[in-house]
Every structure is written in structure tokens, then in C-alpha cells.
Length: 219
Image (cartoon, rainbow, N blue to C red; front, top):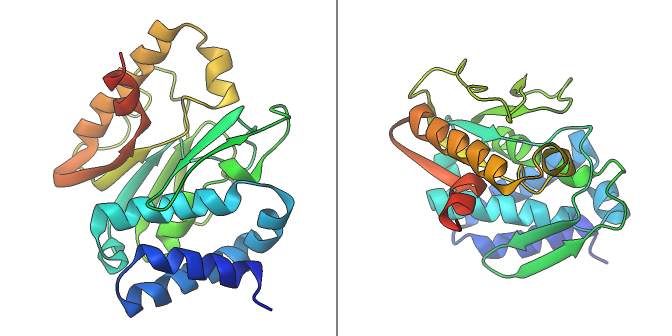
């Protein structure tokens, strides 16, 4: 009988067109299981399998081939941490599904908000950099503890120093919504993050995904 990981690998393999990328996906999932107990977390908490699928889907959409991710310096803004609380709702959008996952207890720790994107990038041979207000101690990628609600919080990062950036899940996190209850304040933070993304990208760099840009587009 196929294991949960085998089924996940088979599902993710539909995202790519060549056998080499299917092998890479299998390697990534195995690495996530070896180092972060992915299979146990999938069994214990709904939504994690879908989040991994969403993040890999974004990379395939951005680069076409996962081999092209190797060596890229990629910034994940609000990358998640090992102390994050669960949001009320998580929206999952991939090439194959749109799913809404509701959380009953937003006061509890969740593995959904662990830094999965940076972990995936590392397994693919990229050079991820994660920033988050939560605890990232012990993570093997470059990371910084940053209050993204503070103006100029990312000024310490050099301009034009990243091949790609993404921000995801900041604006729906319980910590952020508790700090910024007024929509105008959330939009101000989104504007700051979008401006920083533009500053930080190298010429020809790409935004893989931006919740900040999406929020500003819905004003």
C-alpha cells in the first residue's frame, strides 16, 4: 500500500513535465520528511500537504523547471517560524485545486506556518533567506528575526541582492491582524513591503508571489 508520502509525490509530480523534475520533487519530499517529520505532521494536522503543494506549484509557475531554482538567492518575507499560531482560514491555490481550510483553535501552535518554502528551496539547491518575527533558531538557511510591521524593517538587506522574492501569509496571520486591526494600517504595511520587494530585486529578478501586491490591488 502506498504511503502518504508516496501519494504526495505522485500528486506533486503532475505539476512538472520532465522526469528530472519528478526526481527532484521526490528528493524534496524525502528531505522534508527526514529533517522535519513531514509525514507525521501531515497525519496530525490538515492543510500541510496542500501548503507544500502550493509552494512547489509557485516555483514551477515562476521558473518552469525546478532545476532553474538551483543557486538562486531567494527572499521569503514572513517565511513562517517554529512558534507561529494558526490563522482562522488558509486559502490554498494550485494548478489543480482551490481549497479553504478553517482552523478551530487560533491560539495553538501550527506546523502549517513553519518555514516550508525556505526548506523546499534549500532542498532544491537554492540560497533562501527567511525573515519573520517568530523563532527560526536552528533552521539551516540564512534567516533574520524581523518585525515586518515596522517601517524600514528590511532596510538592512542590500538593494538588488535577490534573484526572487515572495511574501505570503503575513496579512492573514493572527499575530499581524491583532497588531493591525485597522485596514488603513495594513495597507501601509503592504505598501512598505511592495516597495522593499522592488528595491531588493536584481535587474531581471522576479516576484514569485506577493500577498502585499494582491492586497494593494484590492483597494
